[in-house]
Length: 290
Image (tube, rainbow, N blue to C red; front, side, top):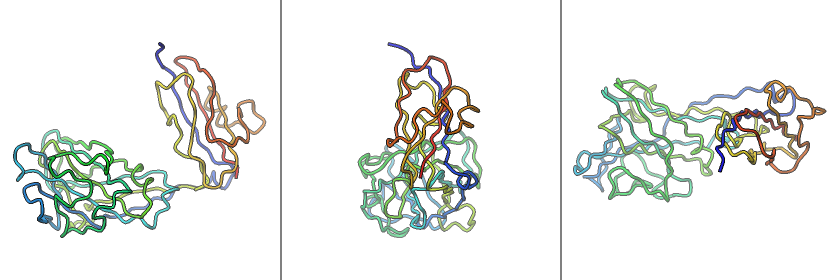
């Protein structure tokens, strides 16, 4: 058995000067619906037009809440997304060290997908487990992150990376669940009077021709000594040129005639560089050939 100590940095580039000059466009999308649900009123809508509540209190269903937030992303080209974050804002001060889970409802879960604020309940909320105070159905939801903060005040924004949820979308609707909290928390809803405090997505789109999602990811450490490099091809890619080496500038600047172009015009979106050395940083780059 050996210890895996190989460090990676991934460089993913697009072939051609036009693509190299293209910058990602940033878009903000405000939530279309949001609602809180309460375990002690499982079939009653307990929403508030200005706030969401997250609370997980064992043995006391009157103090247990989960909240859902929904977005219409039908105008986005999810295949070209580069970044996506969800921002929610504290409705009121919350002292101490606090945290809660953020999950999303899987795209193939169509349970009550058309819910609105005044109709969502503990029992009909998509992906909920009505008998559990904090958990969700793992077959219908996917955990994203644990949001945490200390001594928050009203207006503080909490941000979570949600790119995975948006990339999996096929119907233009994405739903997030705020649940399993460490304390009683109140967040702003999609109808809060302060528009800037409402839940929103911030997304950036890049050129569709660009290769994405390198694996191992950029900056990954402790990877296998005999790895398989992979990436998601650009929308128009016919072939892939793979560059590989141990010096950033050499790999970044290498041309078509360079010995660092280790696999020119290959069909597959994977490459195996062979067995690597311990404790060394490697760099790789993919040029998509349209």
